[in-house]
Image 1 (cartoon, rainbow, N blue to C red):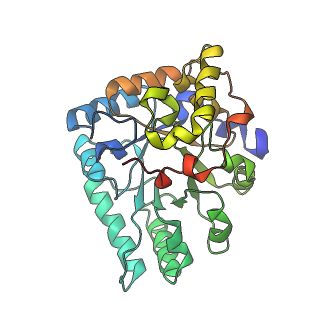
Image 2: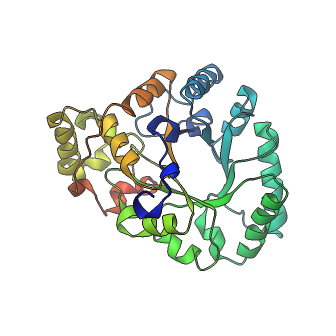
Length: 303
């Protein structure tokens, strides 16, 4: 058994644990993104290289522009695909019917017969009057074999306190990185592991912030310059690249099934693959921050 009682076989090899995030396949995303939305040819090249590296999982969402359609055109029938329902629109009369229709539409765009997992993109949808209908739809889709797992994408582990009173998902997608260690410190990592909930971690590089030099950072991050500079100085002193140290930290978190990484180019994906096996040097605890204005991208003001 591994740490937190996780079976040893759940501790996947480093590269195999990587999952390819595809938000960039459907829209420009990330503060470090200078090339915009990934084109069809580049997307196909990234997918092909990921497959040869034995990566088997793709992460997408209905809200990611035309990402699902791009994947469908590229051909992803041999992949495990995780997608997400958008927030429930106001005025929907039947949440269950809406959710099932959305799932069928995703399957058509992706040109596959089954999803590895279908997640709710908005945790708040489980706290309203439509929660019962949404949960019923997810369980129905599982029973029909259209999805293998149902889950939720969260932004802060404290959201799980309320969600758990309503429903225990099969899979939780959550941010976790060198600066944002709330999943671990809150105790929710251990709890999820003990209850057999699958964990997918995203935001390993905090939208690229952890990889940016001081001159590259937007003005918004000026108030955290001391912390961010200390991070880069630590990497330099330990002769590791920030991408290597960020991945080493993510891979050290026990019980995590997949580590989701999005890229803007085939060259970036090569860097990720190389960095994922380049270092085991772990950043110290004192880089962790509890400031939501820093570690929650939805709060950033970059204009």
